[in-house]
Image (cartoon, rainbow, N blue to C red; front, side, top):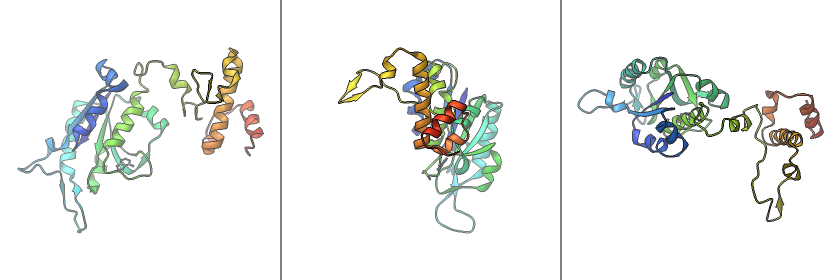
Length: 242
Ligand code: ADE
């Protein structure tokens, strides 16, 4: 899968994809990540990519033409790629969106910067995406966050595919608690059942821990999660009202 980040700060993006698990996925040819310098599509002696706002006001506004030219080229280069605009006004990114985006052949990220973007840039993209109700100085971190979340879902990128099934949000619930050696640390003991070797009991315990955690920390997730009768009975026992 290909990821192209259209940005005024390409160097900011590169190092993240050189090290770590994602760097290995790049080396193995599973993903390709390219930071593309928006100024390469700017025109004139000064290669401007922003200008003063019509109607007055503080700050500069990202111009539409360089983005339009860049997207014409990137769409030709990456047929079928989905073009995403990073903006706090976009649809909120979550694990379900990560799974949907992981089915695309490629993603192109348009990173806003400065105080704003020309409104017409919105008409050039397939979708507007926000990483949460928070305002950052640019779309580069959101783009990298989304690439990280999407790339790790692709076959072969993570060592073991099993860990994807068990992790938080995979089935709409938070993940169960995990432990490794030692069996006791500063008086905190690993739950007995995990040392028992009884796989049925362990699976049951994990499921109940997931439900308890989700009820305590993110109860709204339970409304959309797939729950069976045992799950509901356990939650009722914990004090959840349907
Ligand atoms: N650019 C600035 N803030 C952002 C956010 N919350 N999501 C996506 N892009 C952004």
